[in-house]
Length: 322
Image (cartoon, rainbow, N blue to C red; front, top):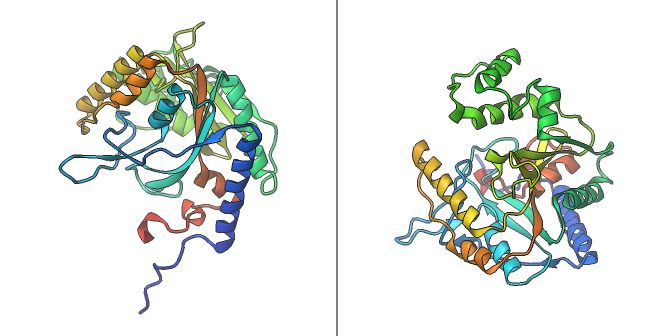
C-alpha cells in the first residue's frame, strides 16, 4: 500500500493564493515606507507568558524557537529602525486542531508614533485589501472589552465578583469545576470570552475588541485615564481570532516586573521556567520610541480567503506531514 503522506495538505491553488497575499502585504507596506526585517528564529530566551509554551532544543545550552519575533523587533526599534514589519514562521507548543498548527506564519509590524486607534485602522485596511476579492465584508464593528461583556454575557467584567462570573457561566450552560476565589478572575474571564463572547460576535465583517483588563495587559501599556484597562486589542472575523495588538510597553522596570510575575505564575502552575530576555530589557532602558504593534496570523487569514474549515488546507504540509 503506497504512502500518501508525502503529498501536500494544501491545494496548489491555495499555495498560489498564499504567494499572492504575501506579495500584496509587501506592496502595502512598501507604499507606507515600512521596512521589512528578519530576526533570529532561535534565541537564548523564550516567552515567559504562562499561556504560551516555547519549543526548546535538547542541547546542553538550551535555545528556544521563537513564539513571536516581538522581542528582537523591539530591539531594532530601540536602535532607530523606524516602522518595521516581518513575515516569519513562529512555533508554539499547543494543541493541534482545525485552527492550530504548532508551526505557523505570522505577520508582525510596529508603527512608531502611531497609537492603538491608528493601528486598528491600518489593520482593518490591510485585512480588507487582502480579503476583498475572496470574501464580502460587512462594516467593521468595535466593542470595548467592557461593552462586549455587558452585551453578550450580561456582567461588568471589572466590577463583578468572581462568584458572579461563575454564575454567568452557569446561566450560559457552561459547567466547569473552578474556584470562585479572586485569584481565578482572569481564568473565568478567559472562559467567558472564549465560550460566550467570541461565538456571539457579529459575523461577516471585522470585529475589534479593545481595552482589555490590566491583568491581561501582556506587553501593552495601561490606559493613562483608567489604569484598570490595558491598551490592547484583538481582531476577530467570522469566529476566527486573527490579530493581537498593543500600545507597546516602553518602561523597562515595568517590563521586568511583568516578566517576574509571569515566572512566578509559571512556577505556581508547575510549568517549566523560562529565562528572561535581558536584551529586551536593555533595549527598553536605552529607550524604545512610543509605538503600537500587532501580530496577525496569516494561515488563519488564508483560511478565510479559501473558505477552509481546517488550517491544513492553508499549509503546504501540516505538522503530521512535515
